[in-house]
Length: 395
Image (tube, rainbow, N blue to C red; front, side, top):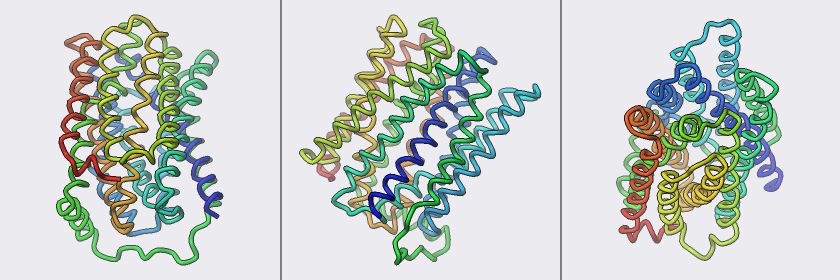
């Protein structure tokens, strides 16, 4: 049953993440091509991640209060129905940046339900001693998808229109939800929380206040993602198109390079994580993420950008896998939904702010300088984390 469930979850995520990878390329490039404005592109990117700041914590409460597998189904189907509206409006010429930004907001609002439900569901079917390895394996579904999805999009863009890519995202969510129907749950299901939603939310916040290392982990995640996510989401397409003179296909292949690096990073965590504390590895990943971002200041061409993004991508799973394992191992399962929703809020919520900030800065200074500044900031956040012995020792 363990192998069956992990295999199904892995395949379902592979399919939906491939759709996500294609969607992100299509959304950002479409808006930048449609408006020619880095500010509007940044604002639309912000709208695609802003829901985590409004609904992220509620998603965690729901994951602790209701059936987690059912929540994953609801998230997938709702996102599919939302994203399919984008190509329809484009086909009839009714779309503009504001409408697409609104649809991106709605899609992500439903999407905030999925990560806390998934990460809280895994410990229900996996023994604690296997969590780091399973999280490493699980993470490869995203990395492989972000390798295959952009490569697939890069090839397809020579044949079909950019708007058609959104259809692939919609179909991917439905296919992933169909796979989840075959997951086998425990015969004795956990007891969901029965307290009022606000009471549960307060209890989750109280937990991170009383457990300082976990609370510090959440705060450091907020700080780090302010510097990391904006350049990745908004800065990279601007760099490829305006500085390097690349096309949408070039951007897709750069994104595929990111996935190559992430796959390598996941393999390294899988093979060698037992030698170090997860907290220490997480901080090393933050330092790596920051220092490799600064290298984009000197990137002269698209091929070199692909090489550099591969190197940068190695550090990303070192952060995400170890952070997930820390919470799964050190926090009681009844709090997992709320804690993972806080992580999701920290990551995706800061992505919204970081994307808008990068879009604004790119209209005043070269995007290469933005990468340099944000890379230094990310590196410093890792250094700050290293000062906490409690965080370094978390496993």
